[in-house]
Image (cartoon, rainbow, N blue to C red; front, side, top):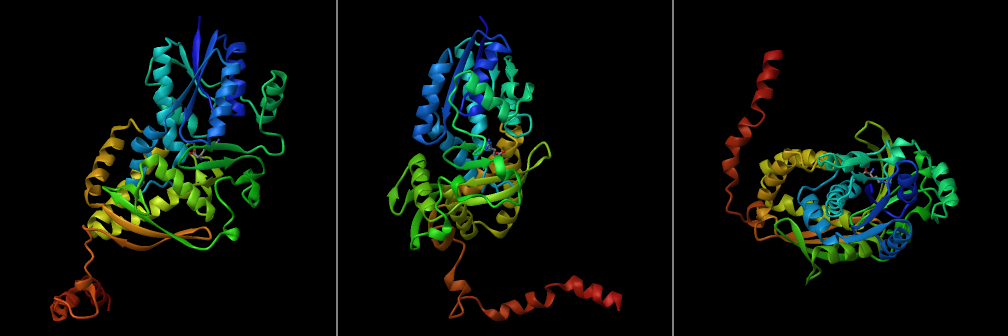
Length: 391
Ligand code: ARG
């Protein structure tokens, strides 16, 4: 008996992978795992039902809390953005891959499988975790060089119901942090995305009246929404609803994939936009100029590793340790105004604020302005020396 454990999403690729793993790879048992990282409930239910019908055994794992607390909180603290992308899919893959390994160990399986193609980042993110184990690794979509058209026909022949059609052929990847939409006519970067691809966000053109929300952060992590203490999963879920209603968090990027391919990627991520905007603003209030400058470099390096799925690279933990150290003072409140697709910070406060109204004010102040004369005399001193030398 040869057993393979498949990371299953309920979508076309992983659905056709189930019979393919038996027909083309001779596995006797295919065990599927649906990782619930915050996809819509109906989708988890559909995927579970479908997996139970197609696979020999199935697991649906609720990973929402772990995803938020172990991955998304780190992303907030590190202002996690890769080329403007909020790192949704990228952060979920390592967690999913680790859970697949755990299931394979408990089931005494022989192999691990994923449904990624050979063109994207996800194959790398899964396999960097998979290949650190003794299990065989199978990637049928990549091996067999399959196209979506072929998969649709194969699925029909095998009685697998498919949600995509030749016209609406988007490939969607969703978790609580972001919804990514790619493929079909969107592959032409000069095509304006049709409104129907969006599910989390209303069109900013049809936005309601502006709304201001209050977020409280403690040590860089959001803890409450408009005065109500709210744990991570609930907070992000709520912010996706509120932000989505205001059309906040749409993005359309030309993204450099790890392989070097440029891809057109469209995302929806209302909560991520709001939280990252608020967090970055709060940091500007409490961190020193030197900390802010250096942290921007650390944040970018962290995001690159996260994008590549290299969460077991020691540098990832090293950078995260630096980031955590800086978050000790990132505690306070931020007011964010949501309107017509934008999330703008309109007020902020913190007990650790380095800002002092008394010092900076145009009015009475304990700063004696005359002390700055000496400073001013020598500011840019070397430029003056150069100008003199060049005369
Ligand atoms: N480009 C993003 C990333 O690499 C998202 C990929 C999502 N996959 C999908 N089938 N829509 O993280």
